[in-house]
Image (cartoon, rainbow, N blue to C red; front, top):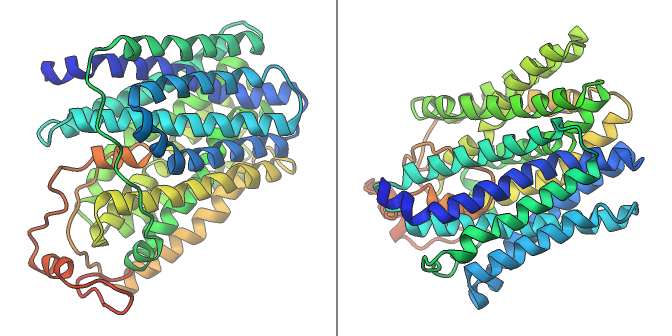
Length: 432
């Protein structure tokens, strides 16, 4: 353990500093937009622009990394992320903000990609789970710590400077490391139709997860502000949601290893919609009550991505990286739509996030349950649940063993050996 930690210490230290600044940036963007008199819908557009840039970065930055290497691109992307952040402070034009947020999304998709591919190459099958767990914990703690900066009695423009300083400081550990740069990134292929045919529930689960959770990430501070929360209460509002997702994700995921994952997906969606519906019906006003609601909201919605990914891998004859890339892209498409959809409802009610969550997840929960009863639970092979952050396709590779594609199940071996085309049925799976 000591050896593996020493080999990736510089990278983890850079990641901690970088994501602390990113956590602060995530809460600053919406609040700064509100201070500049942007409407909720316009702030929603900026959130969607971030995720659109994120998708573009996942598609194009791997080519740049292959040309000039991980460390150089890492330093360049941090510079671009800093530029994108500082751009928010020099213009009140919406188009300018959209470009800045898209640039930020593209930069962070590349940064996540580099971090995760570096960790993946440093890990072995024996310690891969440990490395993924450490990375997940650092991600949670750093983003939460960054959001607590909002409690400082500083103007938002000065907090932008603080976030920019953290971005630039994160270049030092990696910039000074003598560790070897990782190998080129794995090529990305998107076989959407194949994954959809193997598991519709996984596709729709990732989509609705992106729709709902992106609204929280992009508009959480605006929602809390609309509920008349103070600065320290806004940071707690965001932090308890993260804690709910972090604390409940692993036990729920492990439980999904023991039962039909479709039932777990249905139960989580139903629980989330019940929590949000109760918030609307009861007319909650107390900050403490909303903190409990958001803890449960995070606990019910954040695991949907990882469990959908596990369910897709259970039923897919593709490699984990191919399947995971499709699930990630589907989540990202939902994440582009979510902020605009939820911000439009915020113009009508401060509880827009809760209305949208109820309207999306309640029907999805019912449909998933009905489908699980109508179609038997069959799978090509079993892939144990991994608590996978929603970042890039490289973390999916990190969460798998090197020999995961070699499945001992005889039926799955036959499927792999057979020629796969649109007319070839897959005998061991159902479009679950």
